[in-house]
Length: 169
Image 1 (cartoon, rainbow, N blue to C red):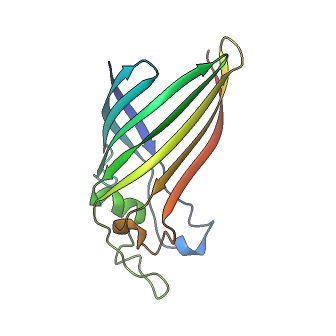
Image 2 (image 1 turned 60 degrees about the vertical axis):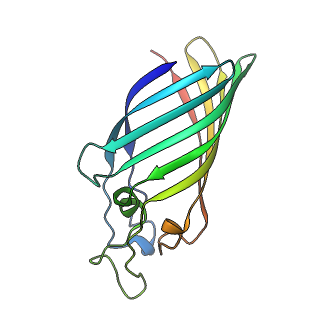
């Protein structure tokens, strides 16, 4: 059993200079703090997490539950998980809302409700040495109607993928 306390950044979703769709929409990056609990049973695990905006940017929160499987093969480890995430309407407004002062002729006002979204994720970590590793990750979320109808989205899902190099000092 593991209990964690954490703080994670919640990055602004886009730079208004990169897309005319987001012109006039200003979202700040914030920090969210929370608690997590994880129960391990061999290679399988169950985890719950809850986090809240601590910088008063959106004052919203998110809670998630996931089950997963972690397997190590040589110097590589694999983590495949699935679960559900709940976001309240304040966080959804920060992420997907179009406020009255941001609406314009080509962008309708939109106030999302809270949402419950299923997701799957996969991580692969390859140990390169005693103090370094490379990690690849992917996350896929099915957006529910509560946020899918946002004029900022235009799709039924979101996905994130990346690669990171870690070096311990």
